[in-house]
Image (cartoon, rainbow, N blue to C red; front, side, top):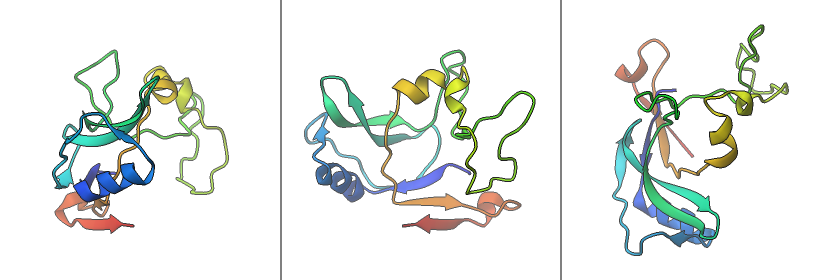
Length: 139
């Protein structure tokens, strides 16, 4: 996954209002962005104790606490064991263990720091050419 996507303000507003979410800052504008990538600011929905669910701006990507200069966007929910790799062939019907919460890099984030990112479409490319021959995946 290359991690590029598009996010339109109308989608953000409808996603939030359909679910009764509160805007953290009234009048906040999230302009349409047709080509977001890791490191860009994006609108996210997250919950905070006592505040309910809010919409705010955050950088897209995950920076582990032990190395703030590192950024990743891909994590396999099934994780991997030291001796064996799980779901090597990316079987969509995989029903084995989900170990992502056991790894130091993701353990706290998976349990405590979650959010939803409203997305209109993803931009991908063939395995060989990557974004040299992009295509769009939308709902």
